[in-house]
Length: 418
Image (tube, rainbow, N blue to C red; front, side):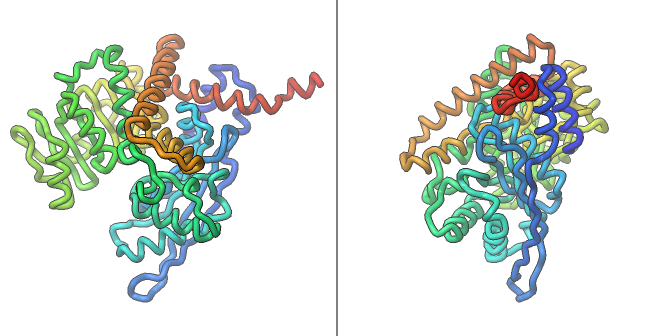
């Protein structure tokens, strides 16, 4: 994935005639650290887990990015995600660079005590690598509030002082911020609502299918449903449900809490079970991939019927599929814009932790709305003026800001002149 992302970067640099120094700096991560975490299991045995942390680029400020616990985590994935975070932070105009971390683990096989040991071991292994002015951690897949609280507590213990700004996405009682829980979903919601007129979307008639019903998928469904959008399909890792008459996200989540999955939840009409692959190919106005990377590829992109794809997951559409879908006239609101609400509000948490003054949820949401609408408008303008896909426009928008920070430190032209 990183090699393909690098080609996207190269194309953007060439399109903007960006100085070669910029590409040279951004083509690889600044530093990546790998560690093996040895955990004492409940039965007394010890088990090893491979883990990573990558700081891709810190030209605009300390690196920032989540930590994911997932059995398919790999070095390539972590470095690619940190590359995307570099651009996501630039798109949102935040004083951060991009970072990411992960542990190759299936958390469903761990007890609560084992999960706590793993969470604390991760911070212990990477403590010299992270910090409020160097690399700031955050939640990601299967690292919820309690996991982040354990990580924040461990970092404070290691550093010998309260250090709330080293990790964001914390519970409120641990120095978190109002509005963080639904921030990623709300950011995508604000971007889509802002584009409604341009995309000829009518909330009272538009249909939505959502792949992935974790925190982001649920809150995105809830916000859109409350505004009149008809949620016709929802899925989780075990499969999904489809009802052309509509689904109530709150009722589906209640069913998931009671049974462990969305299958079997009832909609407004005749609800049927579908696979994740079938959900992606439904005839709907808006498709929201909110699960894993590379869900839409060359293999299935010809069967994608949604005219708008709102990328709430990281990299759910492959570069090859993106090109074909764009050529077919489908609009993809790219991840580095659509799901940047989480890091935008994480920045506010970092600011509040450092100042000791905390905002109410309305102020946080007002700031998020302004940020998302401002950057969405800039990218939509570039999309039209330069006749680019929204993804290319978003990369160019972020690249300009990163390039300014690189070039401000001097280029060969400056040194030759001196």
